[in-house]
Length: 408
Picture 1 (tube, rainbow, N blue to C red):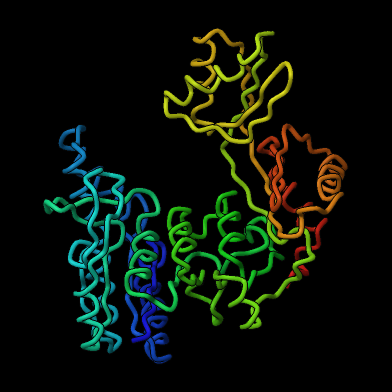
Picture 2 (cartoon, rainbow, N blue to C red):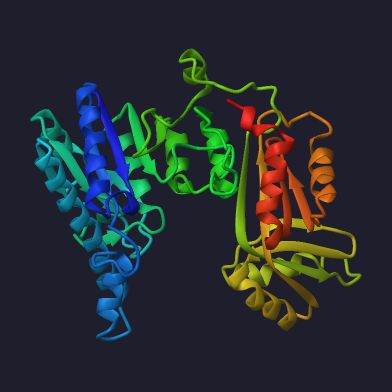
């Protein structure tokens, strides 16, 4: 069997019109000679009748306190509903389909309710249905413990379900259907002339996602990279196959690599809703380390750390800014808070050993009157922290500066 796992998010199945489009994608895959396994998320956003947040509100209207075990039982319902409705859409379109919950699909997890980790997958039941000619529709985001307790997988859980099933079933591809036609040179809502990147290596795609692109959850991306499962990031509206993410050899042999390895930048990603913390350091050797210890103990993650002889600057999520400031002041530090901020990151395989890229970034932003608060760089990224109000302008300027509309 040639298996393809196809994941449809909540915004791809929350209306009849979208479910019809999803069903057409499944039928196309069948016609290409593949055996599809469909993974779905819960339908819609808060306020929609069967959205996850709506189900939670329903229970909390009775009593605010929901214990983790009961909450996971409730959360799993949204994906089950989506699975049944999607299966009905497929059947209406002449496709024999069967629904499996996460636990019926053999996804075995630990007992960390709300953010369970997958221990193993037992895919025999899925294989049996595929061999009999069924399309299997599986509820994403969920599994079961050895003791039979229903669990959910946390953020990006449906992406994780799709990729881990791709691993277990040795799928030829895992398709992730999203709101855009693939991984792009920039967010097309900010840069209308942004181009689709037809082929990326696992490392390149993981870096774009790490820097803020929301095409697939980073946990799922890391699983795909570890087990070398080819991913295709696609849209319900595209006639092409979106972005293929795999190893460089496959990209090159397939003629999919569309941009030159000599190009220093091929994508711009961003993270918003950030806060910058600046702390003056006492003249005591090693005192800077004491800044991060209480934050780690509070479970707070920091980013974009710059250490200077007399101060340190770093970034946290905007909602944690006041909390971090308070923790530092309780530990004897004077902290200054600046928010809202955004981090704009350029990703490219040609940065390593190429002088002048950072200089071009700084020149372009300063010429536009955009103040750079912090920077960081690696062999494939350059990141700049700026004020949030300048974010869209900065992305547009840098996209034009590096001529990313010509990447493809």
